[in-house]
Structures are given as C-alpha cells and as structure tokens.
Image 1: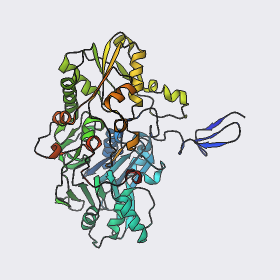
Image 2: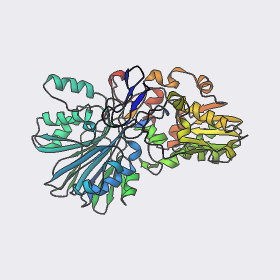
Image 3: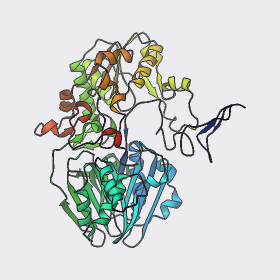
Image 4: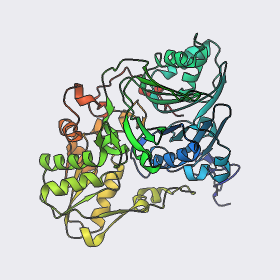
Length: 509
C-alpha cells in the first residue's frame, strides 16, 4: 500500500502511509485554505485583518466588495459583509478571497445604505467560518455586527472572568469578548454600552459596530492600527487604508484620531464626533510604513511609497557598498530599493521577479520542495545579476530562512557578491497588536548578532536600518515620544501592558 493523501472533501489533509498510520497535515478542505496561511516556504510577517465601512450609499454592499478587494493584502483567509437599511439586517461571510466569497447573487441579497466589511488572516487555532467577520449577534437592543482589525491584549483575562460569570462563547475571537461586554453593560443605549466596553479593553483596534440604525466607529487610544475616513459624494467611508477609497472612487478625508468615537445615525443622517478615551501615548505601528500598508496608501498624512523610498535613501547613507546593481525583493521592498539606487547612483534593476499565480496550494509540499520552495514565487534574472555585485534590499528578516533562500537564488544565477540591506531595524520582539509574529525564540535577531545573521543568510555584508534612521525616514514630526510610533518589535518598549506571549493568540481567531 502506497502513501495516500486526501486533498479535498471529507478527511482532507490526512495522509495514510503504507503501514496504515494516519497523520493530520492540515485542517480545512485543502492545504492553505484561503491563501498561504500555513505556508512554511516564506517567513514574512502577516497583517491579521482589514475593515471597510460605508454609510449613506445605496450601493453599500458593492462598494464594500471593491473596498475589501483593495484591502485583500491585509487578510486572505475569509471575508464578510454586513448590511442594514434601517429595517433589514443581512450579512454574508465565507472562507477564501473576496472574489471567491462574493458573487452577484449573494451581493444582491445585501441591500441597504450602511455596510461593514472585513478580510481576515488567522494566526492560531483552526481556520473556520465561525471566526469569519463581521461577527453578528443578537442582544437585548436588537442586531449587532462587529468588524475589527487588531488585537486586545487583555482579552484572555476578560474572557475567563466572563466565563466564570456564565458567558458562553461561540468563537475564539476577542471580538466576541467585546460583544459580551456590550451585552452586559448597565446601559441600554448602544453608544454608552460601546464606550463602557472599550474602556475595559487594552491593545490595538479599529472597530466598526453596526446596528439596524447606527454605525459606530472607534480607534484605540494609542492609534496603533491604521484607520481612515473618506467620502464618496455625501456618503461616508471608513477603512484600514486609504487605498480602499481609491478603489471605489472616494476621497481620503482624514485619519480617525486615537480614542475617537464616531456615531452615524441612519434615521437622521447625523454624524456625532465623540470620544471614549483621551489620546494616550501615540504609537502608530512602524511596520505599517515598512511592510504592511500598500504603497499607494497614506497613513497619518504620510505616503507609504515615499516613506519607503526615504528608508532606502537612509540605508544608502548608513551603509553604502560599492556594487553594480540594486534590486528589491518584490513587492514591499521595491520602493526602498529605488531610494537606495537614487541615493547611490547604482542602477536599479529587476533582479528578482515574483510569480503572482502561486497563491493557493492544493498539495502538501515535500520537504525537498519546501527547501527549494522560494523558486515557486521568485525567480532571479540571470542576465541582470550574472557576474554582478548585487545589493539586495528587503524590508525585514524574521526567521532568516527566506533571506537565505533569496541570497542563494541570486548566487545560483551568477551574482559574484550579494550585499543585503534591510529597511528596518532587527526584528527581535513579538507583536501583540494585530500582527502575526513567531515567538521570540524563533526570531533570528533575538538570538543572533548581525554578523551571525549575515553568516546564516550567506550574504557578503548585512546592514539593518537604525531606529533613528527609520523614524527620520517616515517623516512624522519629532514632537512626540518615538515620533509617535510603536517600535516594540525593534526595541521591546511596548506602549501598553502585554501578557505572556505564549498565552495570546490572534485577535481575529
């Protein structure tokens, strides 16, 4: 009897070997349900979620579809949209990409002028529909839908307390913790109940709360996760990134302020600007500028592409090396590579090409394929790098495995030297605010020196951008601590209390 691998339907992800032994390889209908959520070939960090909201537009569901599509890079495992028109309250959620979850038929059932949408990437626990957002609840004042991006650092403790008091949880999401806090509030008014709940939680979040007649928008008091507001005619738009507004023909208006609470009333059309908390130490996630956000997005009035180019320029000033070509690891490092090339005068070339059609993998790669797996997604252009001294720009090094594979890929294509420049400081600490990161022990910068990392990735030289250089390149004013950024993943200075990292999972799971 030969090995048998079941890749779809009942028993998916089970491998039976010649002796009859059964081994569970993955959960769900196929390996990497969604896209790459369990892929060990690349050790890039992953954003966990993206949210999109519409208020006051007859095509709210369709706008949300296109808005979520623009935010697909923030989560590829599930998608959902909830819509209300004041009387009706409908929603649809599913596993997979936005274009796979929604079609003309199910979008047609989502009628109303107010919508909230969500894309999700899970990091712990089983990938399942129950955790897909928006989460929808029944409570004493009616229907309630919630979509969020971020992570609540004290959610496990609150959940334990609520369970001891009799609460029964249907998901593993800390979004449901907030729903229970709202339901248990002494206030019947939903706005007061939401404020009551938000004052009890800590961490990073961008929330959209939807009832039959209201949309409530809230951002954590440190501003850790990005959250922006825009307009489309008279309609209001809300999103994790401003690029989503461009996708629907809208215009960026401003960032939601840390601690701000907006209440939009469907019955009257009124918008009330309020607060649930004063602004605390402002701490915008630095990794949004470095890696997560799309280059065409603006965060706190700073364009991402321009900030990354300045990071590349700063890298060149900190660690120039004589070379023949500069290349960036697609896609997030291209802007920094252009900046490095412009500053040094070394030609920028497309030395690495990304294969954009390997998103969904229906088979479990063999160990040999995993070792060579970078070739599934990246190819070195031999005519560009052969016999050349190459400066390879990347945005971060997490475990180091991907960097080693890419350096070796360039060497196999004939590069005579490979000098690695990273447009961020060493990533040495886990994130608790809505980014999927390995444990501290798995982060190569936490256990190795820069020279040891250089040897581990087989580079001729290696330099990480300094923290001061990073903050200067982002370009926010220097009037706040750390220029108003969270750099805990680099310096271990967390802006909020954080728990034992082993006890905390993803806020979207």
